[in-house]
Image 1 (cartoon, rainbow, N blue to C red):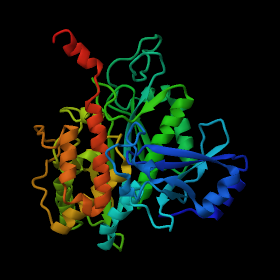
Image 2 (image 1 turned 180 degrees about the vertical axis):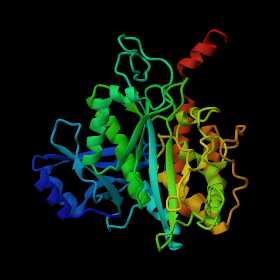
Image 3 (image 1 turned 45 degrees about the vertical axis):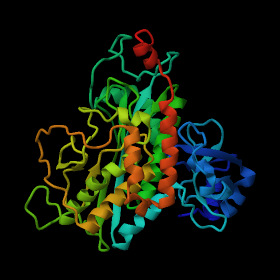
Image 4 (image 1 turned 60 degrees about the vertical axis):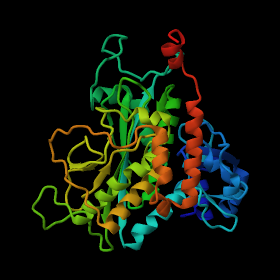
Length: 459
């Protein structure tokens, strides 16, 4: 679990003696960070003994509500458990004026054993399968988001650049436009400084295919759990710094109807005990020079993708992103150097040969997305799945819709999966399905403006 020590706290206090409060960050089932603040007088006790908190904190829906359908006997009557600080995540909060720090937390039982309902621990459990094979994943994440302009409008609007010399908003798409970075240079620089301060390995940033949209890539690391720590912290940094600059940021899968949504892309390589990339075949003269292990891994990812769609697309808005023509995959296909597929083989050398998983939305819980990907990779390797024909570079493909594009159907696939509980845990899958189903049914009962605009006069 990589729990932090008191010596780490002492070194931090020496470096930042002005710190007066500490935010303990707890990513819940949705990947939303729940938080409690403790004063400096309690820091030492927290690092020595942990701090108590109810298990149900991890099982809230997106609205922060308890799901009525959950029997909290499933988590032993919603008892207090212990929250412990995670090593190497203690850092100052750069966008707050108060002298406040933050640290990621993880839940344990009172006896110190990991809590099965903590999604971080779900990923740790899923990784046991690959480690038993003597294989180590190396992963990196890419997150897309929109900047939202401040205003009193009833509906959010993306923050757009201005036509030079005017107050007119710049229309159209300008992918990777330097001026978009210049216009938001102060914000992006503060994001970079916050990442540096919080040990989040920010790599590249560019403007995306939609106006007001950006993508930030993180460096690859050899621990998928830490990579997901980085992803949830990056989302918090972007949203926190945006508030400091008088605007907002959103990682919603589809915040705007007319333009593409936000994705969470994950790159994964696999190495053996000698540090050799088992996805590459150095003896092959083909392009790409991939091994049977990579083919089998892709076969497993494709086979398990329908089961895991409720994780990759975890709420009602997630499915608005899954429409043809928006670089949001709708079928478990694969190909080389091709961004229209769900499982892309990027151009690479033998040492960094990898697969890019392009299905999940930026609204998904990174720990659960990673756990589902690990499950698919291991399942493919252990069963020797054949992924079928690869889509070649530059080939136009007809979009085929085979993945569930309706939330309730994705939950049906998840609930009937015999495979995912083997990796994520039966109890966790049952609770996840119950909480998400409860929110799905609650969402379906809401009456929106669309109901009135389409039906009120006509009916």
